[in-house]
Image (cartoon, rainbow, N blue to C red; front, top):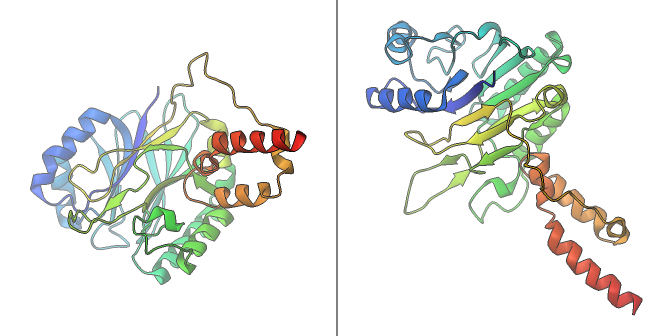
Amino acid sequence: MNPNLFFWNVRGLNEQDKHRPFVQWLSVHKPLIGAILESHIKEPNLNSLLLRVCPDWSFVSNHDTDADGRIIIIWKHPATVQMMHQTRQSITCSVTIPSLPAIMFTAVYAANTREERCTLWDDLHEVQSTLFLENRNWIIGGDFNQITHHEEHSSAAVDHLTTDMIEMKDHLLSSGVSDLRFQGSSHTWTNKTPTMPITKKLDRALVNDLWIESFPDSIATFLPHEFSDHTPCLLTLSCPLPTPGTRPFKFFNFLTTHPSFLRIVEIAWIQNGSRATDLSHLGYSHWTAHLLRHFRLKKK
């Protein structure tokens, strides 16, 4: 079994004109479990609405900690889900899928203010400690309402690291999670204003090291926005490996002797995205070719 999971800020599922496209999206991508963020569904309407939109799905929400039900987790048989913890900004569940290792699934819809986001990370650190998540396959996904690097903002005016960016990067580091490798849009939110467009990377899929060991071929795909201003994140636990004949990675040891080597690697490493994406910022092929010419000239 190779199930799909998803995280998606739908910007309100209480609007009837969103029901059909959402159902169609589920039908096309066939996820087994997912997180609906910013649902705007009041608790008295939750059962009846989801019975219409997702009649074959089970669900839990965080209405006990937020009247608007900011987060709803839905799943289908044969997956089983047990909610372990909820706050206004997150839900953490234990997920069991036949023939696969157990998963800890945290859905996040972070607040807009720095103070509330700090509360989110305090809560996640507590959950991590209480549930021993460093020893379990843990994924955190959703809308974090914060970028980690100025390159994750489309505006040229955002050209330096801010305190908010640094704080989030520090929280990710202390939690032992990083971006899962991903494909699709690198900027996941748009203001949908054609005259003055702005895009940012607000949505992420973060995993710990144990997740990578258990699901080494997993990948997140950020799909088209559909009816929301956020892209849905579809997670596949097993992505096909490169086909035979793919050129192997080569590294030339002489590169480390260049005086700028460590600085260039450091800059690429701290930039946005997965580790593979970060290292791609090195412009490796171009840099190697340039240095080869440099060393050949020196030998002459």
